[in-house]
Length: 147
Image (cartoon, rainbow, N blue to C red; front, side, top):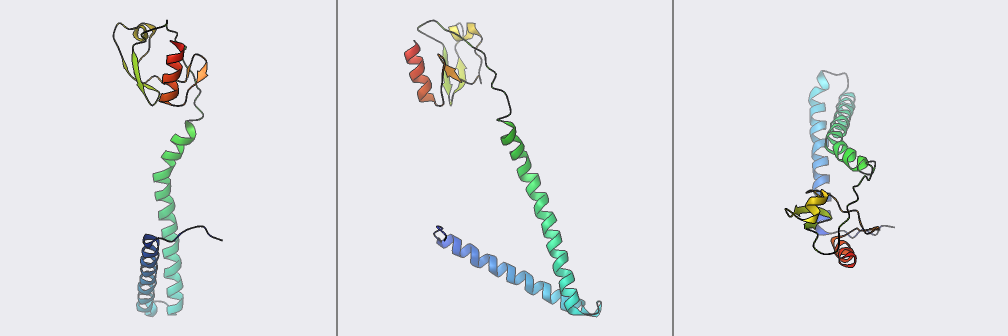
């Protein structure tokens, strides 16, 4: 039982795909019929052309898939393998001196406690006061509680 709701775009895509497939088979049949004099049997020529086309498309698709998606897979799969190494930085209560977005430090004020402690742009905030944070909102709350 399918839970897919067929939209107009789905139906148009299916019809166009079927038209393209039928057109390809028609061209293949016409070409095979034209080659019948070079081969013993036009049916053999049709199957020969069909299998040649299938094998070519298989290798073409697998090559394109590999070229397009393997780099993404390597990046996505390698990311969890990286160790979560971090630098523990402590601040006194009050002004800290850096701004962040998506838990990445985007700006560090000069002559601030953050600058003195070695905080740099693109540092990732992992935890505050021993509590792991997963969003900017959680980080702001933890900073407010800690200071």
